[in-house]
Each structure stands twice: as C-alpha cells, then as structure tokens.
Amino acid sequence: MLAALRVELTKFYRSYATYIGPVLLLGLVGLIVYGSAKSIKHTERQFKREIREQLGDDFIVTGKVVSAVSVPRLILAVKFPMFVFVSALVAMAAGGTIASEYRTGTLRTLLSRPVRRGYVVIAKWLVNSFHALSITMFLGAIGLGLGYVFLGGGDLVFLGMGETFQFQIVPEWKAIKGLAFAYLLQGVAMAGVVSLALCISCLTSRSTVAAGVTVSFMLICGMIDLLALRLESLQPLTPYLLTTHMATFEHVLDDVPDWADIRNSAFWVAGYIIVPLAGAVAIMRRKEIKC
Image (cartoon, rainbow, N blue to C red; front, side, top):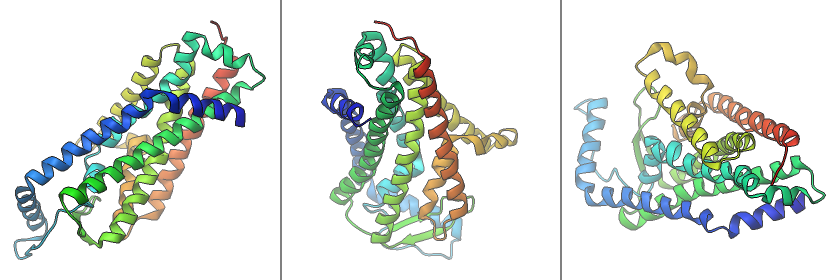
C-alpha cells in the first residue's frame, strides 16, 4: 500500500498539469479582489443599503463593512468558484488517473508488479483527495491574503446565510478561524467529487468522459438547488444532493451554528465518499487490463 502511494505521489506532483489549478485559482481570486478594490466605495454603499433594507431605515450602518475576510466569505456565498471551478479541477485530475493510464498501457505495467488493484485505487484516491483539500484551502488562503493587500483588515460584516437574513458582525480573528473551518469542510466534501470521478474513470477509458460526467453531475445538483428555491416540487430532492450539504458547511460562520444540521451533512458527504470509492475498487478488481 505504501509503495503504491509513493508511486502515485511521485507521478502526480511531477506532472506540470498539477500546478495549473492553483495558477487559475490565483487569477480568478485576483480578478475578484481587484474588482472589489476598484469599486470599494460603491460596494460598501450597496452593502449598507442592503442591510438597511433588511433591518429597517432606522438602523444606521457606518464604518468599514468590506475587508480582507469578506473575500473568502464572498467566494463561499457565490458558490460558483467552489461548486464549479474547484470541482472541475478536482474532477479533471481524478478523472484521468485511471482512464488515461488504462489507454496508454501504464496501468498494465503498474499492475504487473506485486500490488493489489484495490491498493492502487485507494492510493490514487488518497493523492487526489489531498490535492482537492489543498486547492480548496489554497482558494480561501489566497482570497484572504490578497484581501489584506488590497482591502486591509477588519471584522467580517455580513447578512446571515440562513433562510432568515440575520445581520452579523464577526470579530476578525474569529472570522478567520471560522472561515478556515468552513474551507476545511469544503475540502473534505471535495473528496466526494474525487470518489465520483475515480469511479467513473474505472468504468471508461476516456479521462474527458470521467471528468465531464462528474462536472455535469455537480452542475445538475447546483441547478436543482437553485430551482428548488422557486419550484416546490424539486425541494424533496435537495437533501440528497452533494451541493446541498456543501452549502450547509458555510453555516459554521453563523452566530449560532446548527451543529446537528452540519453533522447530518457530514454523514451524507461521508456516503458520497465511501460508496463511489467502494464501487471504484469493485470495478477495478474485475476490470480487464489491456495495453
């Protein structure tokens, strides 16, 4: 098992493609921070107006409401960078880990050694899951770092992410710890995306198919979540979607987090990790490996 893990780590981090993701994330977050810094006055006026609309005109908002910690929180709230961009990077990396090696014959060479097929799959899953966790945490860290450079420090001011708009002011250091925990949970949830991509990669010999199907699954889940806000008939589906439970992890920033709901989402994420991974191992054990 350790030998297989060493081989996978070497192959993964020697590939130049591994480092494309962080560069793209740096560019994406850079655009977000640059846009926020250039229109900081307009953004703060608009945000203060939204707060007054929710809490009443008698509520006066003064001072700085957009700071460095606002950037990683905004990335979580918008969802596109996490649910689509990071998911796509994770799916492309994990989707090609079996399929591409199967097509080139590398997998046959690897399995000619005395190593169990299940160990190979688990080693690939561990490496890709660490990669998913790394780029997820990198997304939050680079957002915070660039935020300090262009926006400066300050407390986190936002309207609660729950169904009821709840105005909250979170002290800066507490906000950083809460954001770190939220991104950690998101990174763990990305291991579910790795499992799905790996399972599909074991079924097909095309890495693009494995990555495309996984990304499409995440997009469909996100669309159902969005449509369920307006279409009541779709609401019964939302408790079974991975994106629903990833969104639940954002609520660790709430003034009084619903830990029971967060734990329930953690169990669902664990299911999304374990079931496809077990399927990948089962498929790999029965797969006929050819050159």
